[in-house]
Length: 236
Length: 236
DNA sequence: AGATGTCTGTCGCGGCGGCGACATAATGCT
DNA sequence: AGCATTATGTCGCCGCCGCGACAGACATCT
Image (cartoon, rainbow over all chains, first blue to last red; front, side):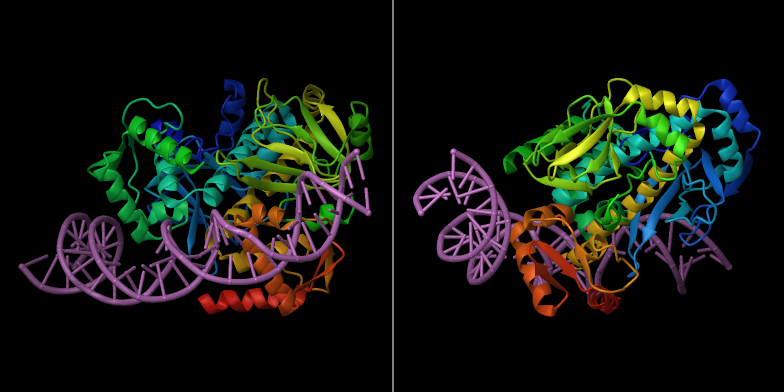
């Protein structure tokens, strides 16, 4: 798991299902693994497909999103190396509820659902690990809903950038978001339009909260989180 | 589990962790149970409290919500008999991420976390049941986020009412929402203001989508879901 | 180099809906 | 019953932001 996987916590990460596994346990998993490459922008699975596998990211990044009837795209998560995805429902005939798409050229491990099921029955400790992780994801989703339903766009973007920079709350030095996000991607994460993101990003640049280095965004975390705090206090 | 618990699926339900347990398994759980009454509006636990127990509702209803810094209340779920809540993280020193409050006078079973943990290690099948359920909740949360980030208030309210009436998608006869919700409560569920809910509810009344019977709302599901469908198509 | 597609930047109109400010009704408490 | 609290109803202002419409910038391919 590289830096990025850590970066996106706790915003959307949450898929570190197998973190905390012992070496033995990890080796058992290893036996069932098939590796497969996906090129950028290739759909890994669709929302209406039956969920037969659990996926684990070795290299690259994967975007999970839902599509609304009028064509919008809601990004639920962008996952990196070490993250796991696929439905966590070990019943037959369950469909995926979202799309998974390779963000860059990526290498994934594919675990047949039934093998994972067997493993979990043999090793309850692993099952507990999974429950722990999914439980955390649930709490974090509540936080996510709070963002969408409570704050205006400036705050939503600010909080997103801080989370992407892995700095939410800790306020250390400037840090880099190591992925090439278009304005449209960002818009799909904070539920707004592409134009508005463009405008806000430029405002943030002028205020010195962020700057670009090639295609990557450098966030001045202390400055930005200060700004957010003040803006929130002003409201109350 | 009475009607209401079913009603709120798949909107917010999701807590039927122990559904599908065998009798034996249920009996094992029975040994660890302590019953306790809570009066209406009593806080069961706060967001900053350590999570020591898992709660199971026998009678009444419980509201789960998060509170923002400016005093807003985001309702994450309203749960009924048969539902289970509390953090699903079996680690020490974990705090609740939200508030739980008795909606009416309620009777809850309280399960010490450690006992649940032991049970799960002994009975991996129960753990799998839990993973299944939490997995479903995660999918449904994605749907929930979609609602907040995509639709206008009329659609959000309409979809909420349909879900509360247990009719999302199935379009049968008129059905009743068996709980006393204030406009403020509804506002906290669809992220809007109390005044707007009042206005919309009255519009819905005039259009014949709903009517009141005492304090309970009767939803004309076929009519309402028809309206929603047409409105969505109009956009695209 | 030209051509095509994708991404970024800017402006203005217009609408949704938040919010303050009441007024009135219902409900609960003692 | 009488008072306090909580819930509902209505109106209008105004600000945020969606969205169409372009115009440039940049990348990629042949």
